[in-house]
Amino acid sequence: MTLLLRLLKIDASSGIYATKVDLFFQTKDDNLPVTIQIRETTLGTPNKTILAYSEVTLDPDDVNVSNDGVVATTFRFESPVYLRAGAEYALVVLASVTTYNLWISRLGEPDVTTLATESGRVLVTEQPVLGSLFKSQNSSVWTPSQYEDMKFVLHRGDFVGSGNVQFYNPELDDKNEAIPPGGIVAESRKASVGIGTTVNQDGVSNPLVIGNKLSRLTLEHLDSSRSLVVLPLAHLM
Image 1 (cartoon, helix red, strand yellow):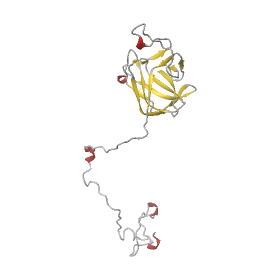
Image 2 (cartoon, helix red, strand yellow):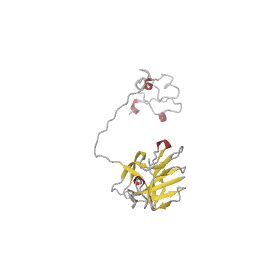
Image 3 (tube, helix red, strand yellow):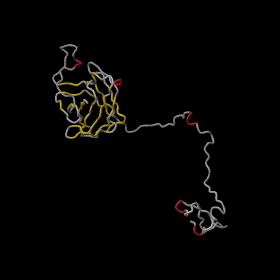
Image 4 (cartoon, helix red, strand yellow):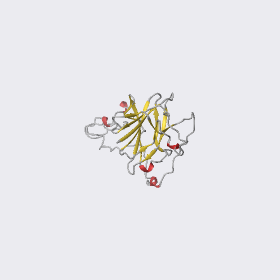
């Protein structure tokens, strides 16, 4: 497994919500995918904690390549990923093959987009943002590359203070018409009591007589024979 990571330092006072990341590939594999993650860090190196919704995998058909590093490949998060203010995170790129190559910059070397003429070449003289580039073969031992930097664009979400949202009920498809009209009938709550077969059996202490009121009781109030118990009117609430 080949891994490349770029440390990110969030300077925004209230943190940011990352929505997507653009990476720039020179080559890709024909069959196997590539994955990115945003992880938390411990003492400047990534740990095993992956931020929710920050893991995105793309198949080779969705990866763009170029010979000058200007064509982006977008990894869009399923949901915005919150990055705390002042915290340091690791943007990790990993694949199970070595055929994926990302565009990077190296101090002292020319920018590939300025190679058309020798007089127009521009050398890389500084790193564009704070952070370091690390490489690894096993996701546990990371080797810093102090003079190199990975080309990437981290997109953040901007939110407005107010807005409108509309909800609607979509039209139902034919499958929802499987129940015919009148197929469901609702009835009021009622109980059928068989006189002499339910409450007037031998051994019932309160037989049904004129003037008594029937009460529907919960299961724990039924007697051992699971017969309906009739309470005298004076005992009913």
